[in-house]
Image 1: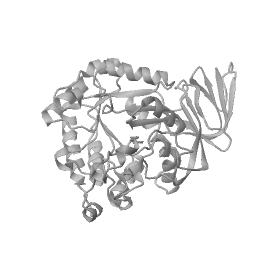
Image 2: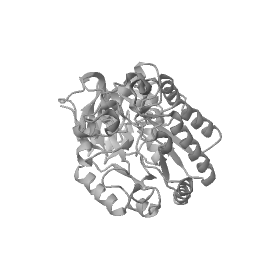
Image 3: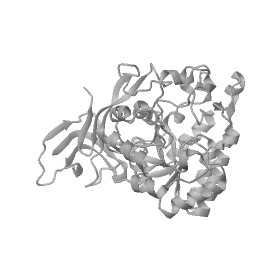
Image 4: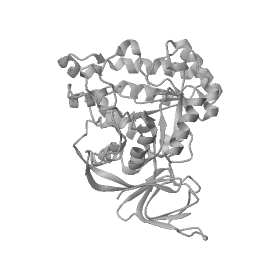
Amino acid sequence: MGLKIQNGRVIDAANELDFVGDIYIQDGKIVGHTAPPLDFHADEIIDATNQIVCAGFVDLSVRPRHIAKETIAAASAGVTTFCVQPDIKPTIDTPEVVKHLQEVAERANYPQVYFIGALTQKLEGFELSSMLSLKQAGCIAMSNGNFPVKNLLIMRRAMEYAASHDLLFVYRPNEFSLSNGGCAHEGAMATRYGLPSIPEAAETIALEQCLELAELTGCRVHFGQLSSKRAVIKLQQAKKYGLNVTADVSMHQLHLTENDVIPFDSNYHVVPPFRSIEDCDYLRAGLSNGTIDAICSDHQPHNLDSKLAAFPETKAGISTLETLLPLLLKLVAEGVIDLAQSLALLNAQPAAILGLKTGTFSIDAPADICIFNPNLEWRVDAENWKSEGVNTPFWGQTFKGRVTHTIQAGKVVFKRA
C-alpha cells in the first residue's frame, strides 16, 4: 500500500525538517519527503492542509488497567508507541505475563506496546527477577515501578545484571522512608490542610544514590517522572561529568503546582506530588536546555471508586493521554520551548532512549505519524474522552490542538470524524 500525506506542515527536528509539503509512505515505511520515489503509487491520500504532520508520539510511562481499552485513547492522542510499567495487574515479572500482554495488544490491533519488566520478583524488592528471560520475551527495559528496592546492595546487583545484558534501568527516584505514604508536596498547601507530605529530599536523595551506583556499575539509567528543582540540578551535573543517564518529566508536572491543588479533589493526587512554582520553573528550564530528555504522559486511568475516599486514601494518578498534545502546545504558546523541539520530546528523543527506530521521518523509518490541527478547540468531557479513566483535573476545560489522524506502521489506526 502507498500512502501520501499532502499539503501539511512537516516537522521533524531530528532531520531538521520544517516545510509545507508531502510525505510518502510505502509498505509501512517513510520513502520520501517533498518528492516521491520513481515507482511510487498512492493508494490513499490524506489532505493535511493547515495541519501539522510529525512522527507519532512515544510515551515512556503508561499504567493501563485494561491495555485494549487504552490503546483507543492512545491512538486518538497521536501516540503510536507506549511503554507499560511493570506495576500493573498482572505484574510483569515472568515471560508468560509478557507473552499474554503482547497477545492482548495484538488483538487490539495496536502491536506497538512495549513492556518494562519487573526488576525484582513480584516487585517485592528482595530477589532479582530473571531479567535476561524477560528481555528475551520482549521487555524493553527493567524497573521496580513505584515499588521500593529494599536496600542499596540489591539495587547494585540489579544494576550490574542490567548492565551485563545491556538493559535500560528505569528508575523513579523516591526514598520511601522519607516519602512515608505522603500525598502532597511538603510545603504551604500540605501544612495548611494537614495532608501527609513528601519532601523534595525523598526524590533527590534517591536520585543521588542511583547516580553513584550508575557510575559504579556502568548501568544505563533512565530517571522517570522527575518533579523537583534539585533533581534537575543534580541530573545536569551528572550529565556534565559524562554519566550515561537520561530523564523524563510528566506533562502535568509542567503545568500544575501545589498552588493549583484543590485539597478535597483527589484528581490532584499524584505521586510525585505537584511541587512549588520554583520546581515547575526548573522542570521547564530543564526541557529547554536539554537536561531533561523527554516528556511522558504518566497515564494512570482509575475507576471512580479509586478516587472517592479522602484525598490521602485515594489512588494516586491522572488519566493524561488525551491532554498530552494540547498541554504541549500550551508550553509552546507560553514560550517555554519551540514547536519542533517540543515535538522531539514526545517522539524522537524517547524513541532514542528506548533504542527504537521510530520517532523520525528518516527514509526507511517506520511510518508512525501523527497529524494534528493546532488551532482546533475542544472540551474535556464525556463526549470527547476515550480513556476508561476520567480522573483528570482538566475535566470541563477547553483546550486548543487536536489529533485528526494517527498512522502506525503505515496503517491509519485513528481518524477523527
